[in-house]
Image 1 (cartoon, rainbow, N blue to C red):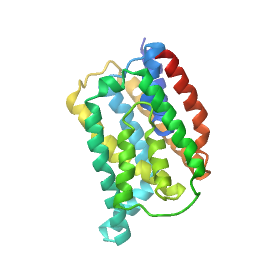
Image 2: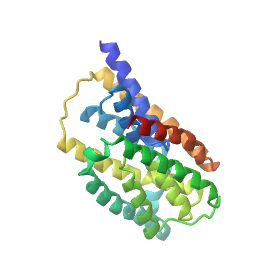
Image 3: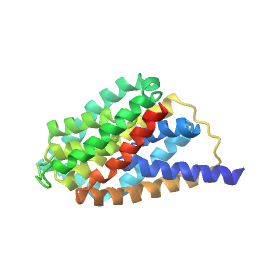
Image 4: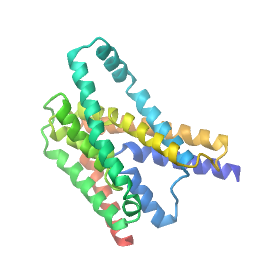
Length: 259
């Protein structure tokens, strides 16, 4: 029984690590799996633990960027201050949209038809990345940061990929590929941290998972997340986000059939 719980924790961790960062929508996968196999939303404490693991993977992955930004902002370097302001501006629409859609959670997570449509929209977004000029190297500003934040907020809808929506938004706004990738995940850190805090304050902190199972889940989510970041950076730098589109179309059709 204990071994089974550890295996379950590892599988949930790997699923979280892979789908949280790759442009395929972790929440959309959860809705689909609930209908296919009766898999339930992980308990709040364990779900939060897995998100902490993937957020930690993001912090480790971007540690040099974060440290460099902190040092430059502390030294009041103008470019760094503007960049930090653009990150903050992204959080405003993300928070507003997220809080609004949270009230519609039962509708959002209960409709496979909606999820099917959202998967298809994400597929179209990724396909659209092929028509964007490869490198225009425009630095993020307050307005462009705000726009990417809108994309992040809309990604609360199951089936809309947060990474896919924000990276493509950055590309359309003129960011280079590497910057679109970096900006997407830097704005995810405070957004995810805020959502986790709300979950902890409003939910049951008990867990049916043992300490070994929780540890295994954390490690697998961290490892899966870090590897996914490495893979996604390579995919984005090569301009191949569209390769995920066929998979999303399949998920969309499957969701539509089941709905």
